[in-house]
Structures are given as structure tokens and as C-alpha cells.
View 1: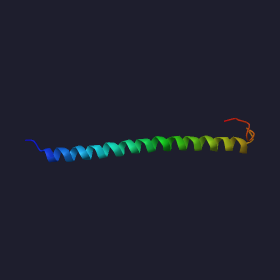
View 2: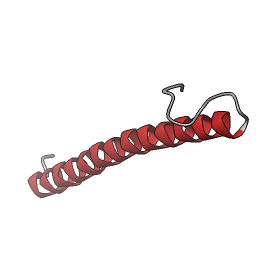
View 3: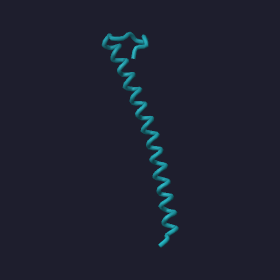
View 4: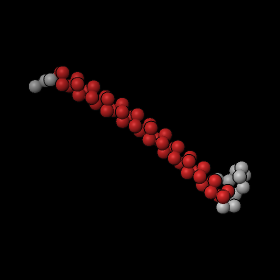
Length: 60
């Protein structure tokens, strides 16, 4: 038995879910990059704090 209205509604719902999944994935990728950058900056600051590097000497 064919149900064109139900099929159309499900297709729209699938598209919405796929769109939100793609959006969430993009946000998560950005968040991971931001966190990695923050961790690297904190590591550099701790190296300076501990005297293992000079501020601005390019060490990471």
C-alpha cells in the first residue's frame, strides 16, 4: 500500500535530521580545534611559568 503523504513527511523529517547532523558535526569539528588550540596555548604558558621556555621564543 502506497502512502505518498507519509513518505513525503518522512523524507522531510529525514532531511531535517540529516541537516542537523551535518550542522552538529561541523560545530564539533570546530569545538575540537578550539579546545586543541586552547590546550596548546596553556601548555606554552606553563612552559614559560616553569622556566622551560622564554615568552615569545617560538617554542611550543
